[in-house]
Structures are given as structure tokens and as C-alpha cells.
Amino acid sequence: MNNMPENRLADRLIDRINNVGFVSVSEYMSACLSSYYSNKDPLGRDGDFITAPEISQIFGELLGLWAAETWNQMGQPGSIKLIEPGPGRGTLMNDALRACKALPKFLDNLSVHLVEINETLRLKQREILASHNIEVHHYGALSEIEDGPSIIIANEFFDALPVRQLQWHEGNWVERGVSYSDGFQFCRSENSVDNEVLQQLHLLNLKEPEDGDIFEYREQCSSIIEAVSRRKKTALLVIDYGHGESGYGDSLQAVREHKYADVLSSPGHADLTTQVDFNQLARFSETYGLSHFGPMTQGQFLLMLGLEQRLSQLSEKATEDQREFLKAGAIRLVAPEQMGVLFKVMCIQTPDLPKPIPFT
Ligand code: SAH
Image (cartoon, rainbow, N blue to C red):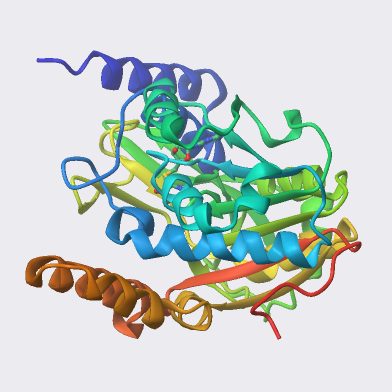
């Protein structure tokens, strides 16, 4: 049985809990995700979950055209970086670059910058992008990428960044965490959370909490937004599942082999995510002097970018089976009861850029 990594991570967590009594939800998520994303490819039908670019080529194509238009609006700078944090198999970038073939002026000025921690996926990204004859660079963090006009596309990246869960208990916000006795279990710390976080919470216009309410605070977002704010002429497009208003609730979920799994039962062996709080992202952006637009629903965004036109264009040259496949994929991306409404799109920009399309 090959469950050594699972045992090792679980043992490490138990050791730490025995030493300090408790790991925060954020530490737990972070340990699980580093292990989970360390080298396997979790995507696709044979993996654990599937994402929009893996569902339909139209997704990446429309984002490529969006990037080209954004470059136009920037005044066509002579060197433009297309940056993707967490590019998975490189599918989105591949589709985006292919769609821009008809725009050689954009491609001539473009270089590709991928932020990826997973070696297996880095290789896949290199392979799939090789045919485009465009410089591809890899980094471990966004902050390592040299400044200059940039377009950053983050699809299902923020949802996989660890969150702290704060719980309202007897008139105080305390840290929620994980302890161990005969198995991992949720617990809460005795201490009130630090003032800095309480100040951030204050900006979110939350209603009065009731005992037991949980608030998810994604601290790492703040450092990413800060990294963006140190740049010039940079637009960040965030596409993710989540909500436009901040509220209470535990949205931590584990997904393994396309099914929901127990968050605590096999650390490091399932994808852990929480919903993205777009209001929190907007407040972080303001804190760092960035402008923000949206969120709008993914359905609305893709339709405004021309999903239907692209679908009929592709369908003209397709076989009957391919037409069905293309149509089913497009519907899945935009239908309100599928990904169309739960997934949202927000654009965050340095203040030296004009209003992005299609956020009019
Ligand atoms: N955007 C892709 C994949 C989403 S899965 C798509 O839409 O298909 C999350 C991706 O983020 C994977 O490529 C994973 O390896 C990468 N990742 C996870 N945590 C990361 C981190 N802290 N820094 C950089 N990449 C990370």
C-alpha cells in the first residue's frame, strides 16, 4: 500500500498538535495543499477535479482575446507580460495564445510568465506551450516577476490559497483550528485574534455575529494584492467560485476523484478549497491603492466576450459529435445552475490603466 506520504503528513501534523496543542485551519490547509500540489497532476477526468479551460477551449480563447484587447487599451506597450498563477496543465494559456494567432502584433510583444510550485505541471506547461515559439518563464511566486506592463489571469487559483477561519465565541473572534484525539477534529483557540485582522474585518460591513459564526479570512490574498500594487500598468483578472458580499459560514471543502470528501480524514490527498470572498478582495485592493471592477458572473462575462459567436464559428467546421461536445462545454460554463453564476470575475488594476472591458 502506497500511503506513506499521507502518513507522513498526518504524523507531522499530529506531532505539531502535540507540541503546541492546535494548528490553525490556515496552517492545516497550507500543509495539506503543499503536499497535495507538490508533484501530481490533480486535474481532468482521471484526477480529482476539472476546471473551465479543461471543459471548453472557448474559455481560454476568449481570455486570450480579452488580454489582447486589454493590451490595446493600455496603449499597446512594446513589451507585455502575460502572467498566469497556477496554470494547471497550461490549457488556458495554450488556448489563449492560439486564439491570438490572428493578432501577430500582440504576440510579437508578448512573453509568458507562469507561477507554479508543481514540477509535474511545470513540465506539462512547457510541453503544451512549446509550439507557440514564445518565451515561457517559471516562478515560485508572483513577487519574483520583473515589473512592467502585465496582464495576470488567475483562474481557480485564489480558492486554493489557505484561509484562516475565525469563530465568534462569547463576544470575541477566536482562531478555529484542528486538534487530534483518535482522529483530527475542529476546535477553537482560547485567545482572541490579533488587532490587525479585527481592523480588516471592520472594513467588510459584516452584520453582528452570533455565537458560533465563522468568518473566512484569506490573508495570502493581501500579499498577492500588495505584489500587484508594487507594479506599473498591471491588470489582474480573478476568476473563481465565490460570493460578492462578505458573510459568515464554513465553506472549506475537500474534493477527491470528483466527489466531496471529508476535510480532515486524509490530509494531503484531496483538493482543499474555500469560496473566494470578492468583497474582501475589493477591500484589500483599496488598501493598496488599486482599482477594482466587478465581480460579474462568469456567465455574463463570457457572453459579453462573445461566447455564442465563438461557439457558432467553431461549430461550422465541426462534426456532429464535436458540435455536441462544444455546445455542452459552453453551456456548462455559462448556465446559471452550473458554473455561470457561482463563478465570478473581478478585475483589479493599477490606477494607471483605463477601465477594463467588459466592465462598463
Ligand atoms: N488555473 C488552472 C489550474 C487550477 S488548479 C485551471 O484553471 O485549470 C491550481 C493550480 O495552482 C495548479 O496548477 C497548482 O499546482 C497551482 N498552485 C497551487 N498552489 C500554488 C501556490 N501556492 N503557488 C503557485 N501555484 C500554486
